[in-house]
Image 1 (cartoon, helix red, strand yellow):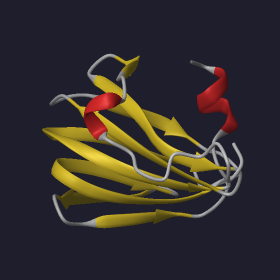
Image 2 (cartoon, one colour):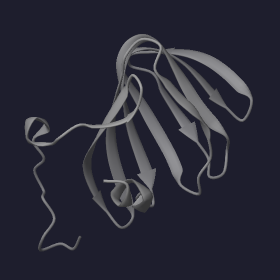
Image 3 (cartoon, helix red, strand yellow):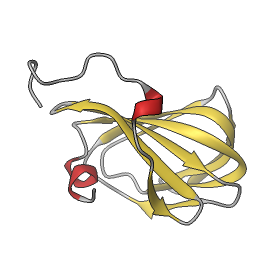
Length: 116
């Protein structure tokens, strides 16, 4: 995506959800080569399995309650909280109360675009 084709205003209602795992779906909100914002909705009990990637990740807990694990450390986070995942750190989340996470990745997650 370049400056001339990038959407500068993104309307949530116009973007489709894609199911990525039982109890979990996502919307790719916006991206360019260096940055990506993704909304992830979880049902209670939904699991973001432990994984790692080369991207820096910062996640805002928009709503709900999540048990988040990063590099072997676990913490319960609530709506309004956030967490930082350094590159290559093993991390995941379990949804304890239905909610939404807003993930920000740098650089953008090309693998998310390929899986569409």
